[in-house]
Image: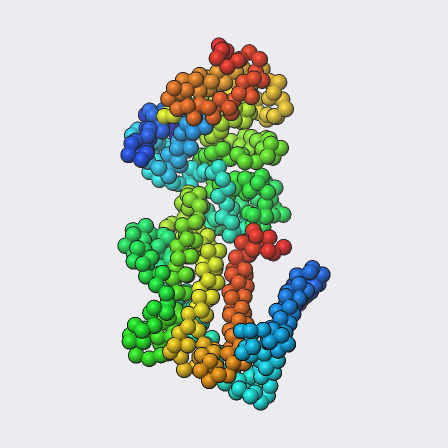
Amino acid sequence: MSQTLVELRQVSKFYRDGIGIKQVVRDCTLDIERGKLTVVIGPSGCGKSTLTRLIAGFERPTSGTLMSEGRPITGPHKDRLVLFQESALFPWMTTEQNVLYGPAARGEATPQAMQLAGSLIDRVGLTAFRRKYPTQLSGGMQRRAELARALVNNPKLMILDEPFRGLDAMTKSLMQEYFSGLFQEMQATVLFVTTDIDEAIFLADRLIIMTNAPTRVRKVINVDIPHPRKLADIVENDSANDVKIRALSILHEEAMRSFGGSAKASADFVQAYAARIGRTDSMTPGNPAP
Amino acid sequence: MEMVASGAIGREDSRLAMIRRRLALSLRSPAPYLALLGFALFLGFWHLAVEVWQLPRFRAMPSLGAVVGDWISRDPIYGLSLFTPEYYAHIWASLRRVLLAFALATALGVPLGMAFGWSPAFRRYVFPLFEILRPIPALAWVPLAIVMFHGTESSVRFITFLPAFFATALNTMLGVSSIDESYLRAARCLGASRWQTFRHVVVPGAMPFIFTGLQISIGVAWFSLVAGEMLAGEFGLGYVIYTGYTLVTYPTIVIGMVTLGLVGYVSSAIIRLVGRRLMQWHARNLGIEG
């Protein structure tokens, strides 16, 4: 079995933008390795979400190829499941019905599937809430319910597109530790998209840094921090800090480069990272660390 | 067997207890007393304005005493009261027309609205025509309806049906197009077919809008029914009001009006209840239910 689950080769994506054409992804080549948590990070608005839609099969590339297990990706499939930025739990179904929706829709709601659903609901700590509707759950619970709804289908790849955006800081860090432990335990293959460098380093086995739009891979960094990880430890971890400094300097360069072209994107970027850059003593804006 | 029965009784008991609790709660809140006070003030003003102060413009109006007296009389002076069978025959005639028109409007309007929302191609063909026909007041259809249906009964029903149909179709369409794209994507991802997506996502997702549409629909049905009955009826509450005017039996007019108010209120309350029943997830969402 090949080590690579999904491969992108020279993928480009254009959108019609009024009368003009906008290139969002340019010649993007990357691999998603089995059993690893791959984090994609890049400035907001750089085209990361487009990339996830391409990999999920919701959209077709303008040029280039996307393969999953050696076969071209032609449309959405239960092997590649997406957790969206906003909760996509069906509000008219209970937690249990939501989790079982995939198997039920495909006519696979066997006793085994029901049992798996039950144990996953238990695993994400929602047994007491299995008959509740999504609006009766907190933000963190919704994320966990959605995770169970995806996992029950045994997907080969889980795609998480900024799944913790909009959660409060406390819940967010709890969810990060929880997801990290769960994916580690399940040996799941995960593609995780974020704009948060701390979140990225905490979760990643492989960190892929994207360029500004039109996006492609700028740098791949392997994060060799042993599991299980704790958020509190990561702050003091030398190799984590080393990765962070390298990543920030690249991201900072990207921001500077795009100043001429897309002032809005880079203004957002600088705003988002200013605080973090200030916290890293070896680096000041305009004077990137080696 | 016994356990099941006692379980059912227990549920029944708890439901009764819940109703009692809710009743006690609402009696403790100021709302019911304020409502009663509102009624009392209105009726008091009516009585004083007509009989005591004899204000200009009110002098010719039927008094509260005359209306109520006739309404509850076993031998009404003007021929219509709670104790005459004609009263119920009129209510039944109107109710039957409204229910028929409403049922037909729902049976045709909901599928049409669904088709508008679901198929952009269909919408492009039909919606512009629909939008030109929709603002034409139902009353403008009266002459054509009479010519078309050769009789009053069918034409009154047609006039009642028309605005109800437009309201239902339009709201259903809004409901379908209000459904978040991420729900549709999630369903596709999890392996739902187009038909399953329609049944499990589009229909329940549009349901809150559909029920808003049905509420509006029954309201406008009553509205145009009365107009139709005044012009072309031989029975019904609109007919009662109009003949009350031509025969100068003014208390009968008011009896007809109040009855319309009551029947109209009850009919939309029933729709609201059915909607709440069908959409418990939505009721919870709005904090209406526990």
